[in-house]
Length: 452
Figure 1: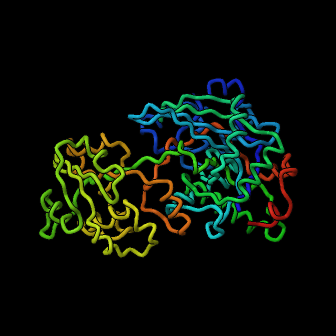
Figure 2 (figure 1 turned 180 degrees about the horizontal axis):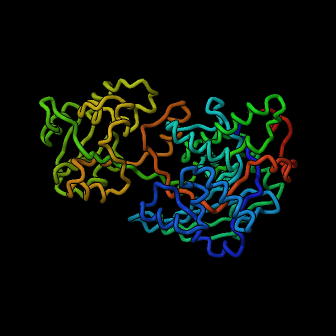
Figure 3 (figure 1 turned 45 degrees about the horizontal axis):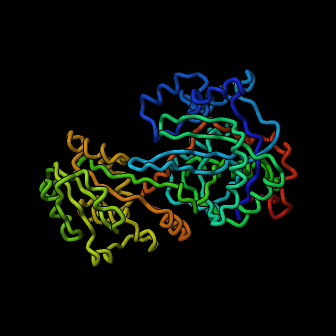
């Protein structure tokens, strides 16, 4: 199954690491445009490597990387290791402090067809090409994707807890309200145990599909260049991933609501009225008006195929009529058809609003994806949107069922919280990394030999 390897991580020099908060960068979907601009103003922030700007972004990133290496901004750890990464966080309305425990390592960049790394969403070819081009120029991985393995025995957490007694970095993440901590495991016997546990597991890709597919594209290109001379152990066969245990209750998935910026035209020409929209929902949903819009999340919580609708200042609970589900005729797996979001996209966007199937819906500019429930209500009240559709979160069991069925979910189905930070750890897959202290970790022909 999944082959993982330690790495000699690249990190900010100790003098800079003492102020690591200034150099980390969150993923783009957790920061505003103003926050991104502030990150770019810091000449040493990791965003200059992760999301470079300019007419030649990949070239700019390479120039920055070479300058930082020469100036000692980044330094490579002397020994290979697996890097423990903990994120402490709270959720609104809960007194509990969660701790998502995981580790960063190299994982072989498996093609989807191999069934080792499983995806749950589709990607955009242009975005994959951008990530592949950046990787080809720099041979440097700037932010780990997020993968999930399942271990109900929680064996590896004890080793991670031990590593956390001597952290390398700690930072308060103002962008997400999380506390991020990094440590390292360098004991060869322990690392082999990590490898043995993962060797019996598949991995579900939770976050970073475009970056992972960029690594796949880069590996295929290098494999084509190397031909029969490739051994399968070249550094470019590997990808930087953050792995967490899907069995943990500290793994949280938050909902992403749908905001209808506009309603499509009715049969007579002008956009649908609120009353016409409600009439179109009637054949498929029971529609219950509510007195308080603030109650919507609570009124739909835990209820199958139930949604909140905020339209024209009025809140409604809508729930699919059970007999209507048989009408859902999209060509997809039963596990996908059973999802709340599939029901929403089919019966509301396609049937009630007439927007067409998944491809047409993705192309329609009238839908925005918003995580904040309060923002949804505010934007409707301000006239920036016609309606808000409030949803429940997807469960980990649903994600696993869809992935193991070989299917994908509707767009923006999952928001694994919190996101990983860029800048904590970098990884090189340049040719000179080959044999860089790793030979002892390869477990014979089954683990490393031959191109994947």
